Amino acid sequence: MKHYHATWVHDRPDDPVWMAYEVSDEGHVTRMIEHFAVGWTDYRSAVQEESESLTDGPFDPAAFEDGSMTLREITADWFAGLWRKQDA
Image 1 (cartoon, rainbow, N blue to C red):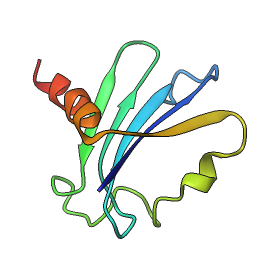
Image 2 (spheres, one colour):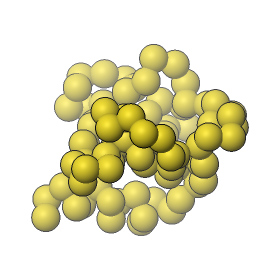
Image 3 (cartoon, rainbow, N blue to C red):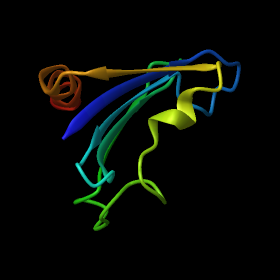
Image 4 (cartoon, helix red, strand yellow):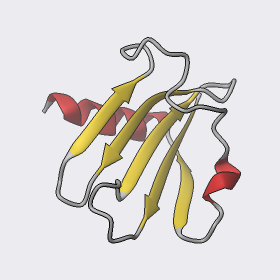
């Protein structure tokens, strides 16, 4: 598993300002966290949605290289800490 944190700046309130991804070795997004500027956070799990992946295709880090987004790999512990916040 790999974990990523993506951020971007925009003025669209319906789009998240950051997202965190858990990606399997096969490229499937198994869990995803979306955080919105208004303070709302959405937690999604492929298992709960009865899907192999939360995205249509394999996760591609190169898709974040358009200059408006920043993607960095994070630790599993960091992702787990973000995921646990849904229970707080």
